[in-house]
Amino acid sequence: MAGRRPVEEAFAARRAAVRLLVVPERRSALEALVLHATTLRIPVVEVEGGTLTSVAGFDGHQGIALVVAAREWSTVDQVLARARERGEPPFLLVLDQLEDPQNLGTLLRTAEACGVHGVIFPSRRSAPLTPAAIKASAGATEHLLLAPVDDLGGTLADLSSNGLRLIGADESAALAYREADFRGPLALAVGNEARGLSRAVRRRLDGTVRLPMRGRIASLNAAVAGSVLLFEAAAQRGPSGAADGPSDADEGSEATHRAPPSTYEKAIVDDPATPALSTSVEDPKIAPDEGLLPDR
Image (cartoon, rainbow, N blue to C red; front, side):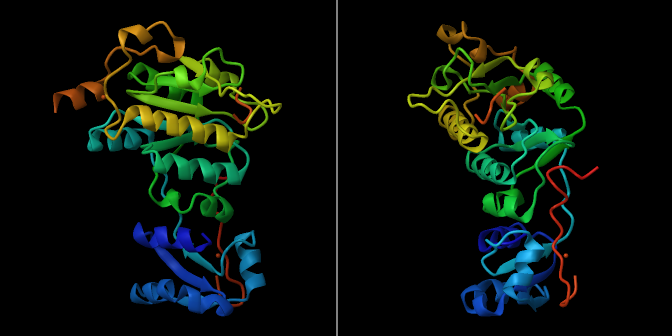
């Protein structure tokens, strides 16, 4: 991972690290991170700026990169367990075949800021979690649970049967996002930048919402559209996730329809197609974080 903030967040999350790479000309501005790495007995290696750009795969590395151990992916069960631990109804982000690493990083950053418990995505046909994507996430990847699944449609069906409502972003939806109810157990789906939500995901949804447009542009990109929806959901859910469901007046809308109370809700009460919408001194290497899908 490359960039000041991702490295800071990796240290904060106590991510296992192999070595810290630093461009000598920028070392003085990065001395706090260098000293922290030294305290943790992480080797510090000076490399030329061009070398670091080649290793990281982009030039926005700010003169620093951290070679880390392979990421440990989470499971959907672990994501749901985090919600229970926090005493909140589950709040999940579903990324349906997202392709752009920058969009990926931005959405992960927003998801973490909005209190999402975890992110689910297909193990194939997803944007890789490259150093550039991690930098775009501002290190949010170190705090989010990321769960790849082989059968996204089947996973959504399982979530639905356990009481989560599934709402997707779709520019042709009848319901505007401000009219929808995002409280309670929820999985919010954002589709591919060009094709929108896949058929396998769309058929599992309880409803879709759109972002009204007033100008001549017909749609927003995936990162912007998804971020708007995430913040709307966070505002409605409040600090505790708003375990209360929609009011009786809301029951008529497809996107506000809610399944019977789930095991997650009971536990809490008793105690809950969008078009965007690493390593030697001579040859240090930072492997992409195995992709937001392991390459197959």
